[in-house]
Length: 544
Image (tube, rainbow, N blue to C red; front, side, top):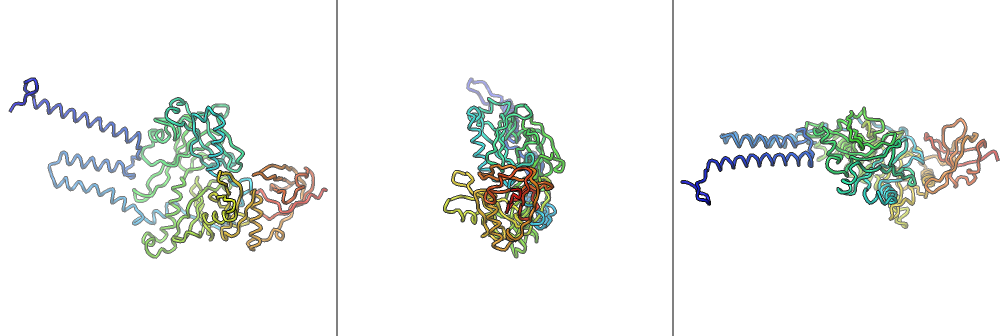
């Protein structure tokens, strides 16, 4: 039977079918190109089969080819069993069968005494600016420049150790696509906020007399987008995480990115394999083994990854079954965590509590974010949340809210330090809370005042020697003296001969200390401490 077209001419069915096949092939090719573009430009999945994406693609491709070209129904049905491979692999790599592997991801954990191994933190080095306050202070500085404020916003803040000082840093980023298109040479600078002094806020736009142009960032678009730039720059195989903004010792901006692989039974257990250092201005990428990373890089091991590995270390001590029945010696991380800087090293810190008992801790874990060296300190007491509530209770009439605390050592006692902020997010009080007894709380309008109040509370509770009884006396000649304003309080700093310690004298201790001159002989009484900065309990100028 012939088929005729509208013009009455017969239609060549063979030619139509051939054209249809060509159109189908072209359509498939176009679809595959679009799918590949979407995959590599938008989704950016790791290509190693252990992450699942390419494994599933390969399995579906094999199944499709078999069903398309094979005439054997038995083979078609059998090949469907490949779908079980990644599922079985994920189950086998789960803690059900690999509990020991997950527990050991954190590496060897040392157990030490907190009071003997963690030095007192100097008053001037305590971070009183948290991320929320840093954001508020940074916005205020950016808002003073109408030209910048209308085109750029401030990206995420990161806490780093810069030139021996704690600081929050954040890059400028374009507000939207159009502002990015108008400024494709890069955002003109970054914000740095001192974590110890809320008055020290800077917009850095030049480094070594050269303008700062942050071309690659999370807020940039297309090929200038940081994640896409790294992925397409040759790092497609494994997972990428924790894109952290940092600056080197000269102030040049970089991104520190953690590359991770699966270390447990091929399909499970994320662990850092390399660290990528990305020049935020030129886009140059250098890959390092974690131990070979530049000294200024603080965040090599991501916080979320450490948090999970610490939790696995506590949960799976006696295997997976124990987490369901018996629950012997099971530990779990407390809510939240923070960073600590000790002797120039950055640590991730979190508390550990017995599983099911989240109101008290059994100890703390500190993990060095550069070396992954993990240390467990066995200290029973209150959790961070409980300590926050305790501090808030003393100022409940004022409605102040506590920030998440950091762990410090005060007179050999594990102690939570936190700030208390008003509804506007401004710091109004400082608080120390004992880990062992959260009823021992010291609150003050300055750090030194809060610390004195806290030490007094400890002495009354017989946890430390009373300040009037266990004081060390130093009599020496003043080499240098200076009075500065710290957190709204006038403090006098004294350096005496043949002593590397910096002595701090508050107005409450002596109103006459600022009148002392270089060359005067002074008598200082204080509680012994390994810190290089010590608060003086009694001060006498014997030259008068």
